[in-house]
Amino acid sequence: MDEGKTANLFPRLIREGKFSLLREEIEKIPDLDRDLRRKHWEKSGDTLLHFAARHGKLDILRYLTEIVGMNVELVNRDYKRPLHEAAYMGHQDCLLYLLERKAAVDCLKKADWTPLMMACTRRNLEIIQDLVQHGANPRLKNKDGWNCFHIASREGDPQVIQYLLDACPDIWDTESRIRRTPLHTAAMHGCLEVVKILLERCHYVPDSQDHCGITPFVDAIQNGHLDIAKELLEKHQADYKVRDALGNQPLHQAAITGQDKALQFLVTDLGVEVDERATYLDFTALHYAAREGHESTIRCLFSLGASLGAKDKRNRTALHLASARQHTPCVRFLLLAGLKDSPDDGWTYARQLAKETDLIRLFEDNRLCGSEH
Image 1 (cartoon, rainbow, N blue to C red):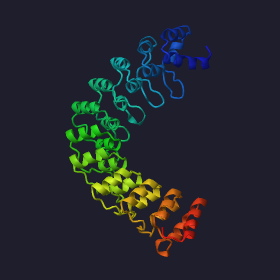
Image 2: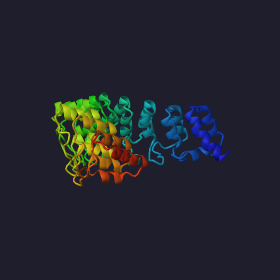
Image 3: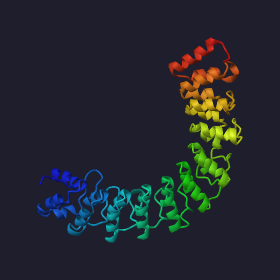
């Protein structure tokens, strides 16, 4: 048979579950079965065992293993084994068969991911239980320092979290390479029910900071998860004024990511000063919103009483930052909202920063109006 034709045929037959045709093609070509035992296919470098495990074809998996004699520990270009494929795709019969054939339960693919970690990405409790019952180690970490509990916390399935805590009670006590805990991860991804479980069953220190000084509360705020932020305030005594490594408070992080409701919550409900300064850049929240080009956030801060003329350590207002980044809608609002054409507010310098034609026109129109808006 033509090599190119064969290369396309066998993976396709497996995907389509055509076991009889596959067996016929293998058996009618002399010595081809020996070549198949280690042959890699397509760009991924998969073996036929990988295809069978990925697509849940147990009969083909058995045939390739027991008749053709393929090794269940064969790897593709990412060092995935068939067990990784079965775990990720949730094919329980294939997974159990491979484990019966003594496949290594904690085998590692590229970046040191185990089959258990991959199962946790798909929130498949039965697969997770099978792997743990066959000896999978939940404490193993990948190259980023995440164990399977970090991954489960990101995915947000309460049943998986409860099971892993029952199976390995201290699994929560872990940090990634940049010192992020599973509580950080759950808060960042908006997994409220998981956050509740972690606060109830685990013993995280309030306001634990990652390498950048970010706490779970800041993760919740800067991603707009107010329900989680409130839970952390009530049940975890989170500090809503905590500063990160650059001296930013949650107020500033919310402005950077354009979380208007979070800003309203911090200022109106918690009493945070809207013009609070970040210690490193001496920015206010308005500076950050202008730099990032969040017009709606600038409007929100303005409605909360933010000072339009506040200057950083380099004597720049929000108008300077919006102009330098060519954020036309932000410049328009700041001009109309009240920045005056006077030497003291740096208007001329902001005008010089404006490179785009429509921005220049805005400044000229504002000057010609002669109003103080």
